[in-house]
Image 1 (cartoon, rainbow, N blue to C red):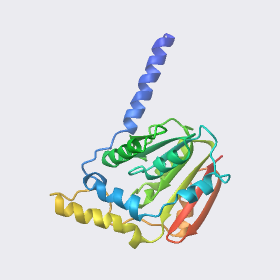
Image 2: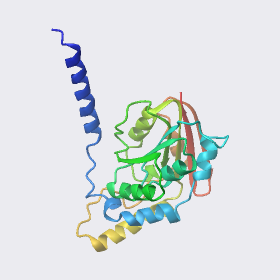
Image 3: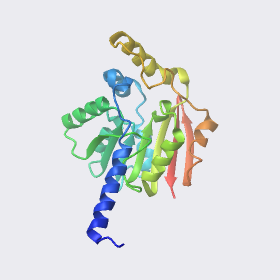
Length: 242
């Protein structure tokens, strides 16, 4: 039996919306430290963590300027540190910050509004199930994402999927467990004094990777090029999609 074209189109749209809905599941905020003590992580991100803005710009745009119309997504954006800084610096691009924590996103939206930014937006998204079509972005940024995500292979698969052919991702991860774990320790400590339960999904210690382990994280996808380097307490990857 053949269905009319309008019925087929409606069915396809329903299926697409269902997939998007499925990808937005598992975003319950109540069991997350990033919800319960959001201000502490926002403070760490904006005042304590290394600011890699110049490294990002130099790695992604050697001529120091992106092509107008470039679309960028920041995974695990927290308070939108890089999404906002790059949107302000390059008004000719559009940035999208995504995070699982709605509290972190409220911080990001408030700051973007205060800065008068119209070329960046923030959405609640699980980095393991990104609700965007394949080949949606030119650039992807992820900083300290893998310290708290267990399924790194799935995350990198999604990162590769949403990039356009020729698109690039910049990944920054701390190298030492002690320094990487300090924010988690502080959030756990604060949460234990202000909340009655302790069933948060985040680990008590950050996950860090040796140089070989970090490089091997990206081996599951057919990147055209992968560059790995270290600088002080951090290690970086710049991957280009074929």
